Image (cartoon, rainbow, N blue to C red; front, side):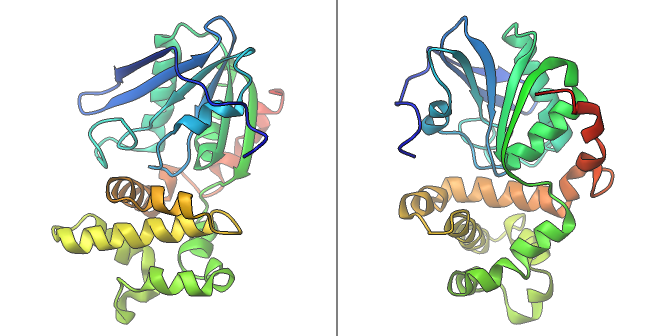
Length: 257
């Protein structure tokens, strides 16, 4: 992180109502008349943070950062209602129009790369350039590798803590077992599942686990937002019509830098 730009504060923060039930946190920093760029955070459900402004030269860019539905400072927290990939794509368009931006650079990593691709393939004429990092396409075999078998062999000790809230007889489908608890009526089971889910993810998104990242993502509110929303999206296949939808749509955006 030493190569990022210095910390900056937003020149404007606001809340934008995008539906009857959802209100998004939205901020702008950098140059008000600069090249527009939207930062698309990960998760889904992880939320944005001050460090995300630092990917961009504040002397060049008008930096737009927002929290997606149900996470970060957006309200209501951890809500799954009207919360799909295509709702978020529409939200990004509402943000663009609200800010009076004609075309912008779209920048996303991890789940942010998934949503960025979905947005750009839907609205290619509104995108000046696309930057993706840590690309994730939310295909069934990717989800299975991370939440059932695969990453478990890379981080076997941390995997044991991920298994702990789930009885052995339910471990044949860990995503389903977690989702039952995260959407169930037992607060203790829900919170334990959220903490274990978030700890697993926070401990494995870097090859060398980062204690600060783990503490932040596993904090109670952050963990619940992340775990509920991620399990919701993953159980529904990202709300795509078929697993390779994003790959199949790449031909429509090959002209975008």
